[in-house]
Structures are given as structure tokens and as C-alpha cells.
Image 1 (cartoon, rainbow over the protein chains, first blue to last red):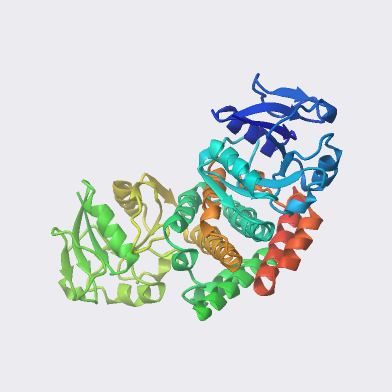
Image 2 (spheres, rainbow over the protein chains, first blue to last red; image 1 turned 90 degrees about the horizontal axis):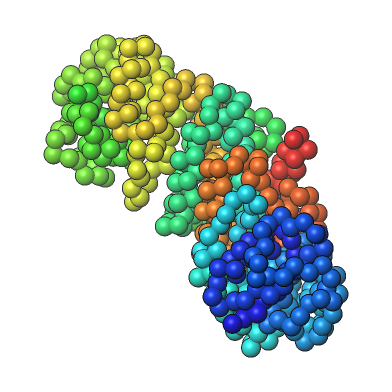
Length: 252
Length: 252
């Protein structure tokens, strides 16, 4: 049984608690939170503490706090030579204070308070300062997910940038599409099957194989009509993404 | 039984033939194609013709050809006062020649040769010159889809632009993410659950509610690190999409 304690009270901490609570190979020991009020339900078996000095011994401490707070909280831990992981996509392994053995336990998914996710399918990117610790991290990851990946800090940084494109920016394109629909009294609903199919397609084809549309086939007439139809930043975004698609077409 | 004939040999024609062939309320009569070799299998019940003068009477003729060819082919039809629809997202109703009753039958989905789609969930945007024809179009649409929508030419134009954002541009962001992964020896595989969840989220939340990430929370440190990490058009796209997300945040 791997004994895990968690630090944090945000979405990632909440989802991790929920996932570990369902596992047979991990025992959740303590959750440290500065806030008295958690945004999620805590299983009975895990003890909520508000003072770092109340931490008991565990095999792994997972710091699931905002990037800016990791260094400070890892330096404040009142113990030494234990295994401490952060959950950030952007912070290097080294941000963990030298007092303890450093690790990263980064679940690559977008977590919302109001939407449950199935952890089994979520990739967990792990990294450890020492090989023996890597094995414990991998077993911990496998307790909740089928997809542990060994990813070093440099790769993780790239992955996080890629995730911003695949998630945050993609969602913003949905938002622009939604606005265009609303401006013309068209229900956004109509686009949902297209959005679902666009995502489903790249599960089977590479994005480069899946690319279609006026930019890809260099349909100047449609591109010009669309650019005339749009204004402001929407037009700018249309223009630069069209150029980028066409540049990619030429390179192939 | 609605008698439908189709003109075209591309992806849309192929998918329409397949969908109508499974319907009890539509009888596929003839398929006109200039090419002798179709890229799809034709059911036995539909007759392939290569000469427009071989067209027999039907309740509806669907022109599923490229935008540029619609005007010419609709002008070449050797009959008058029959119902003729095109399947384009961008062309107005009026592009159909005055000889016949004009209509639009636009299935809003991305069709690939190599990937089957379930037509039942595909929105079909319909428009007709005359009200009586609209009813026949709606019955025809319902024969293959649960989602017929009355969309006029102006709305359809907006919808098509929105679809370029939600589909073509979104796929291009996946491609950029794929490239960043490959440049850093990270499998694109890791991003797939995130891509699926990003699309799944906007089935339940509005894109504006679903927005997360460094731009949304104005995390300058991460944004600067990402922009320093990127170069060329990737950097430009990162910059403009970040700006647009932040501008949206302020407006709300």
C-alpha cells in the first residue's frame, strides 16, 4: 500500500483525492489545505490538516497548488529526504526544495469543478530525481490511470505549450464560432456534431491528414469572402491561421 | 416515398448515397457523375448515369459538387420547374439556375473518404425558394438525420465561417500541438484525452464558461515563457489568440 498525502484545495487536488480514494493500492493519509472550506468532498479516510507541522510520514507528498506557490510550500515542509512531487505542467523538477527528494506528478487534463473526468484515461507525466522514486511514482500513477509517461522537465514544458494550443486556444476558437453564430441568430448547437467529429478524427488520423477547408485547398474566393465577412481580431485570427495552414501545405 | 437523384462523385455525394440507401422514406433514383470511376460503392438500386439528358423525373435533385461547378451544372439540367438543391455552405440559394425551383440541402459535417460518420446526428441546414418545397426538403432531411434546421443563405454564410473556426482552424491547432510534441520527442498520443475532453466540455458548458489557461487567468509569467519558447508563426498565433482571450475576458 502506497501512502500518499496531498497539499492543496484546488481542482487538481480535488480530482486527485477522488481518484486515489477509489484505488486499492494507494492509501490517502492527509490533505493539507490553508482554507478551512474545501471546494470538494473529502472521503472519511483522509485527514484534513491546516498546519504543515501536523504532517505524518508518507511515501509521497503531492503538492497540487498554483505554480507560484510551489517553491514556498515545498520549502516550508517540516521534514527532510522524503519524496515530494508537484503537479505543474510548467515548473521544472528543481523547483522542489533541496530538503526533499524531488518529483513531478502531472496529470495532463483540463479539470473543471463542475465536470467529472474519468482518471483511468488521463495521461500522468512523471519525473523523479532518483530512479527508485520513479518506480514508486509509476506505481502511484498506475493506481489511478492506465497512462503513466516518463516525461522530463524540458519535454513537459513543450507538452504544456502544446496543450495550450490543443485545449485553451481550441476552446477559444469554439468561443469565436459561438459568437459568430449568436451574431446571426444561428444556434451554436448546430456546430456541436462538427466539433465532436473534428476531435474524433485526430484519434484516428494525424492532424495533418485530417486537415480540410478553404485554406487547405487554397480556395481564394471563399477565403476572401470570409475575410470580408469578419472584422477586428476575428479577421486577424482568420488571416494568420489561414496563412499558417497554407505554409504547412507547401512544406509537405 | 420521396424520389431523390444526386449529382456528384465526391465525399458529400458518397456519404449522402450511403445515408439515403438506409432510409425507408427516400428512394434513390439516379446518380449523375462525369467520372466513370466513383470513389464509393453504389447500391444496386440506384442507377449511375453519365449524361444529364438521361435524368428521369424525381422529387428532388441534389447537386453535391464543388462550389465553382454548381452554377454551371444547375444551368445544364435538361428540365424545368423541378426542385434542385445544392449542398454548399457558402453559396447562396440563388446560384441555382432560374429554370428550376431552388433549394439548399447542406449537411454540416466534415466528411472524409476514410472515415464513416453517423448521419443521424448530422445537422442538415435546409432552405427553399417556396414553402411547399421546404416541407419536402424537411421530410427528406428527416429521412437521414434527426437534426434538420431552417437556415437562410445569410445565416448559412455565418455558419460556414463559424465552422471554419470550429473545425479547420481547430484541427490546425492540433497540428501545431503535434509539431511541438514531435520537436521534443513527446508522443502526440498524450494530448488525445485532452483534445477529447476539450470538445466534450463544450457539449455541456458554453465555450466562454469552459475557457481556462494562462491567457484566461492572465498568468504573465507562463505566457512570457511560452512566447520565448516558440518561434515564427507559432509564436504569432500564440500571441494573437492570447490577446483575443484576454480581450474577451475584459468584455465579460
